[in-house]
Length: 124
Image (tube, rainbow, N blue to C red):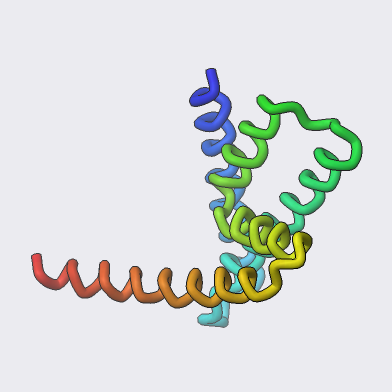
């Protein structure tokens, strides 16, 4: 059942990402800056912050709904929201250095991983 919740939420989130990213790119057709991705990441972070606030303050979101919304919908929409939420959690806990290291390593690693994957594809 958990897999169905995550999978169905992921489907919805992926479709929303495609729709929102496309809409932003259609509104700004003459730019090469990835505004669609930027908008999706910002919207996902806003959504996870809002939902986490509801979940923590009002106990409105149960475990099944968390799976569906947080991992499924928002995971399909953008995993950047989870990155933002985890970083926020570190900052909330007063772990400022750990948060900074997490952000720095995360960004360096993902750019390196894209480069490495791209380079590896040339070997085939």
